[in-house]
Image (cartoon, rainbow, N blue to C red; front, side, top):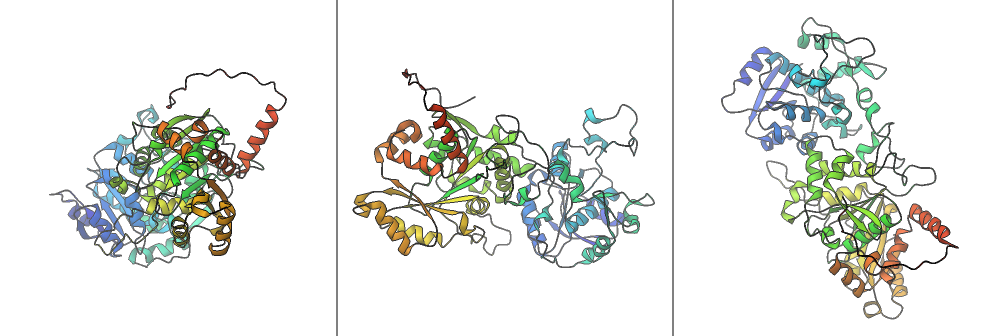
Length: 565
């Protein structure tokens, strides 16, 4: 199988000559200076595989996502002297070998990466004995095959359960451009047999790679990953969740699956995105207080600040010593597998009106927006849906997707975080102001929503409804204007203008349920939260439980600290 290879090598390395002498079917056609140039070469469609022998510590989901955008599948392999990097990259599905590996073994890894890219499965590369966990090492000398009924050690703990290939996101209708490697793989795919989750490849295909040794069985994508993935509720619609199989899960604050998702008669939306046009219509106010109402009702709730222009969730909640929790989680997801425990470590716990709210705070400086790559955020939001009953995401106003201009290397997209959150959300709340300036802005902004956002998920919320801006009977006036000029989207709430309550809450770092629990704005937000069937059911059960109880005198007590341990 002839392979065209592009490499990133350290200065003075003779790896190219050794690789070509050892394996004549691999031809190095380009030597790139860094990862950015390597991505550009891959996306030019000139190579079948890339090898990162320098800078493997910078290789993550973002780079793999860029490689997956190439016009034809590109196999990715790497070399590193650091054991942690080798284990991390293997968990991401990238064959990574030691820097002093033999040329024949490296050639086999390159070929395996190409096959994995074309077939959409996880690359299968033997793990060096040095990389094995000492606790997993057998007391007796290592043999090639273990006793019947045991599984071979893959070196990296439970890393294979989280592997994802760069080509996994390719649609079934997309026909990659055929190369010499692709032509050779066509016979492999037609000759493969499926049985018990194992794809058996013809021996003659791998004869040149493994000498006279018998061809190993290559585990298929279903065989390696399905048994380890977490079961998800029906209707969850992101690419990672769609691959989930059966399995258990432990939430961040207790054992068992979250109550609000997947249970009989409880199809509540797991991910709620709050968005609105430019001009500060009150997106963060709605997001924070909506999440607080979820938390007060007893649902495990997480707030994610994905506003790349003006993040402010931490300020609204009085978190003065704010850190970029969302950047920390995204960095962890880009570097390797992400767990619910990782999100718990990155989040800040806040007590709100007797409930608990977990917060992934936003960027400390807006210029850090390149850290929030969609490839990593997809993993963050997918894991958040697994670990919490409700996830409320506050996103920025801009949805433009033309940042990727005609450069030699791909440019990051500042609005990619907002577009991704809206496309993955079960419920999108479009917040606009009820005045002559803000309402037209909302109408124009709704036309820019990505096509990936189904219209049936969008709900419109009008904020700061007041007679001074809308005339007598402002709610009737706003409803009439929306029915006449607005699109065919439901107007689900009209939040009244309550500046005293809003200012008191912001000044004290509180939510409205604490600063003005009986105010009109808080009551309207509570009713908006109760559009969620689970919240409404919990509110009804709580009201029935309180009926008939004698009223007790409440003794004031000093407010506890905002942070929770």
